[in-house]
Image (cartoon, rainbow, N blue to C red; front, top):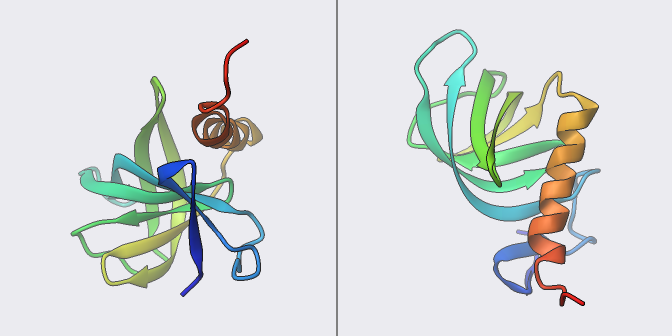
Length: 126
């Protein structure tokens, strides 16, 4: 298990870079969301546990399998994001999702959200 250290507050944890296996870092979050299988229309509730520019992890009571194509919806600030992904890892209720066909603008908005939410919120205003 990767070593974790808390930064700023308990809502953010950065994994030790020596333990990071991904090319794109992720930030620990606690965001409500919902997902559905591409082949179905019904959405199921989930909790996003981490978010990054290349993918996310979610916790769900539903059953998904590696290779499943998902649509995931969640809120970043005041807007709803809907993103497509493929399940790359399942460990109990934890599901690792890699984004599929995501625009550069959407990736940039996720990076901006992470930066603004976790790094700029503690800056002192002039």
